Each structure stands twice: as C-alpha cells, then as structure tokens.
Image 1 (tube, rainbow, N blue to C red):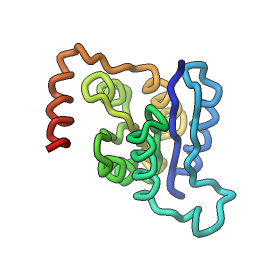
Image 2: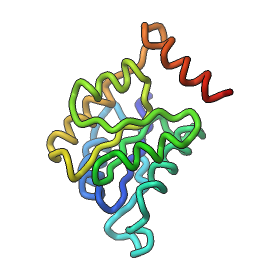
Image 3: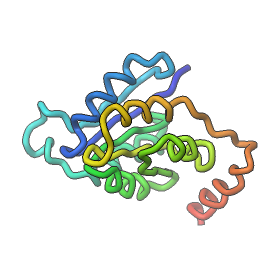
Length: 156
C-alpha cells in the first residue's frame, strides 16, 4: 500500500500546490492524495483562508489517521510548518534543499514537509517532494531515541 498524502496551501502557495499535487497523483508510491485547498476556484473567503488553517487541518488529518503525511505550501513554508506543529504528535518542517528533506524523515520522522512558493523554484519544489516521499523513518535507527524524547514530552 502506498502513502496517503495531504497537499495544501494558502493563497501564497496555491500554484506550487497544484503542480506538486498533479505529480503526486501520478506517482506509483502514492495510493491517495487529499487536496485540502486552497484552490483558485474557491469562493473569495475560502481562497484567502490564511496559512494557520491549512497547517492545522493537515496536522489534524494526520493525527486522526486520515493520511500518513502532508506537503504544504505558503509564501515561505514557515507559517504552515508552525501551524502544523501546533497539532499534538505532528512534526513539521520547512525544507528547501535535498539534505534537509532527507534528514526530516531519517533523523526526525517528520510527517509534514512545507515549502515556500516565494523562496524556492518550482522545479526544485517538485524534486524535493518526490525525494521526500521516498524516505522512510527507521524506528531502530540512532535517531529513534531522539524522536522518542519529543513524543514522550508531548504526552506529559
């Protein structure tokens, strides 16, 4: 069974979201892609929904088991990462290079990757999304103990 992914953006990231969404829908490693918006066809109030709603909605869906991971976009990637991190149990990061994307999974077991439409080129964003879904966290790795510190802290 492939990855179940969420893709979302605020108005500052919608163009990248749409391109990455199309790529993921054609990727054989992905079994399902859930588009949580925004979309250019949305009503004005929905289209201008700010980044916190997108990040929190994605985090809640992952927390509740509706998806495995999410790729989110805003202007910088920072806002949606902060918002998703507010959901208990979620680890989200903004990453704009291959090494950080790799380590977000292998060292930190992040469920949410965020990128900024205003700070990274579209071809790089597409490449990073493709790379990111190929990584799997190893619960027997040296990093597992560090991730456990985070998850134990959340349950306090």
